[in-house]
Image (cartoon, rainbow, N blue to C red; front, side):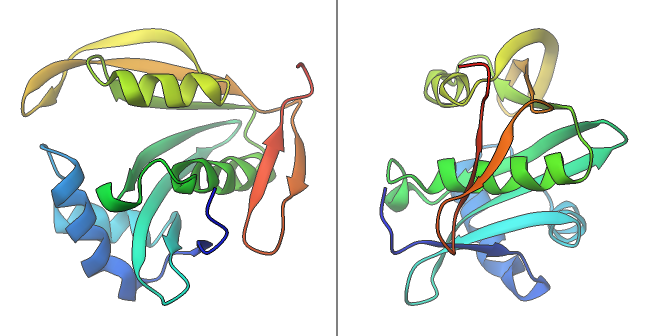
Length: 166
């Protein structure tokens, strides 16, 4: 994991950089309106030491369940721990909001993302047929219970949840 990445709360000024990453990473990119709405909610970004935005995550809390709506890391910064740190930040925030179970959808064909989430304790709990449009594909619904997790700070720029069951 590269210590030169900083995780912080997203700001409206991050919208252009977020949209650029979104368009590169996802074939079915979110609209500017959807990104603008999400960045105003529960959202974090990752940036390099020189301030370049390289990833983001959006979440949503509703009573005791939450969702990771979107997570993306610029291809040139993938496999450096950025996604892990962004996911940790959103899980901690969701847990602090009273969320017990966190859900997300992932393309059925996205084996790399599925393995990433499995390593973080997510398990498959369902399938949404033809959820994605371009290309049309099923989504797997993954879930993780965070109610029993212990929040641990891992330095000024990172947080993680420790699963007490392991």
